[in-house]
Amino acid sequence: MSFDDELSRVLPEIALIEDEQLRCKAVYAWQIALEAAGIAPSAMNEMPFSLLAKGCGISLAQHIRAVTRSALSLADAMASSYGGRVKIDRDLVAVGGLLHDVGKVLEHQRTDEGYVKGYYGKMLRHPFSGVWVCERAGLPVEVLHIVAVHSKEGDGGYRSIEANIIFHCDFANFEPFKD
Image (cartoon, rainbow, N blue to C red; front, side, top):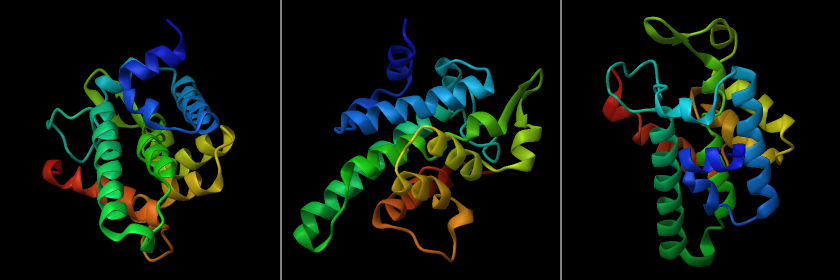
C-alpha cells in the first residue's frame, strides 16, 4: 500500500482539500513528519492526542479528524450566515485542521510505559516543529501561520480568520478531555 493510501485511511479528510497541489503538499508534510519520527501513519490511531488528557482514549488521528470537521463546519456556518462580509479560504481551513498537530508525532515518544514527551518535544513544542515540517513540504506561509498560532504560542498576536477557526476548534476538542 502506498503512503498516500495509508495516510488517507487514517485521515480521510485529506480528500476534502480541493486544490490538488495543496493536498499533495499536505500529504508530503505528513510523510516528512512520520518518517522523521520513524513511524507509520497507522501509529496515529494509537498515539494520544495530548499528554495532558491521560486515559481519555482519544487518539491523535481522532483529534485531527474532529478538529478538521469542526473547523470546516464552523467555516461553512460563518460563510452561510455572513455571506460576503467574511472571506474564508475553505482549503486553508482543511489543511490547517489536518496539519495543526503534525509536530506531535515528533513531540511524543513511545516507551514501554506508554507515550511521553520525548527529548525533541521538550526542546520544541509541536507548533514549532509543525512549522518546520510545513515549510519543508513547501506549504504556503498561510498554512505555516495556522500551525504556528493554533496553540498558546499564538496568544497575543495576529491570527487570520482561518487560524482563529482552527484555534477555537482545537480547544473545543481539547477541553472536555484535559486532566
